[in-house]
Length: 308
Ligand SMILES: Nc1ncnc2c1ncn2[C@@H]1O[C@H](COP(=O)(O)OP(=O)(O)OP(=O)(O)O)[C@@H](O)[C@H]1O
Ligand SMILES: O=P(O)(O)OC[C@@]1(O)O[C@H](CO)[C@@H](O)[C@@H]1O
Image (cartoon, rainbow, N blue to C red; front, side):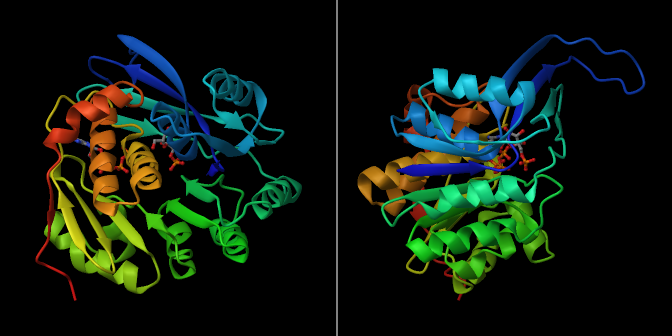
C-alpha cells in the first residue's frame, strides 16, 4: 500500500483577480476551493491514475472535516490524527502572476505526533511512504527524520518532497526519491541554478549523500532525473499555464504510479513530467486524460554530463 503523509494539510482557496491593487478593495473574477497540502495532492493524483493510497497526517476543525469528507467521497482512504485547532487555509492569488500565502498551521501536541508515529510503525517492507510539504510551525525540523527512521526499521521505502533542513536531514537515510525544484536544490547548496545541465553536479552530490533517485523540476525549462546509473533530461510540454499549484505533487504521483506498474525509472520519469505539466495547465489537479495527452511532448534523453 502507498501511504501519504501531510503534516500540514490546507484548504486551498484559489482566487482569480484581474489585477491586484494593494491597500484597495479587490473583487474576484472567480474563486475555487480544493483540499490541499502536498501529500493529499499526491493521494488525489494517484487515485486519478487508478492507484490506491491511504492519506495520513493531522486534520482539525471545520476545514479538516471538509478535507476528510472530500477525500472519502472521492474514494481515497484516510487515517488522520485529529488535532484541536483548525487545519489552515492557504490563499492562491491568480492575476497576471501567481502569488501564494501559506499559513503556518495548527498546534500539534506530543500526543498527536506519537499517535501518527504509531501508525507509521505499522508499515512494512511492502509499503511506500510519501512525506510531502511543510510541517506546522510548532514541530521541530527533525520531524521527517524521526518518521523516516521508523521506515528504515521496517524496510519501508520512502519518498520526500520537502525543503531546507527537513530535506537535508533525511538524505543520509536513503530515500527512494526526492523531488526538489531548481530553487530548492540551489538553496541546499547556496547557489543559483538556471538550467538542466547546471542541476547535474548538485543532484549527483545528493545521490552521493544517500538518495536513490532525485528528480529536479525546472517548471517550463524541463526536468532532470539522476540516480547512481544515469542522468536523464526531459523537456516540458508547452501549454497555457492555468495554475501550477500541485504540479510538483503530480510529478511525484505520476512517478510512483508508473514505477509501481512498470519498474522502469525512465518511463516513470516521462509520466511524472507529463503529470506535472497536465496540472500546471489545469485549475486544480491533472486528469489521467490530460496527462496522457501530453506524454508525446515529453522527450527524455540521456545526458552526457555525468557530473562526476
Ligand atoms: N510553465 C510551465 N510549462 C510547462 N510545464 C510546467 C510549467 N510549470 C510547471 N510545469 C510542470 O510541472 C512540473 C513541476 O513544476 P515546478 O518545477 O514549478 O515544481 P514545483 O515548484 O515543485 O511545483 P509546485 O508549483 O507544485 O510547487 C514541471 O516539471 C513541469 O512538468
Ligand atoms: O506550505 P507547504 O506545505 O510547503 O505547501 C502547501 C501547498 O502550497 O502545497 C500544495 C501544492 O504543492 C498546495 O496544495 C498547498 O497549499
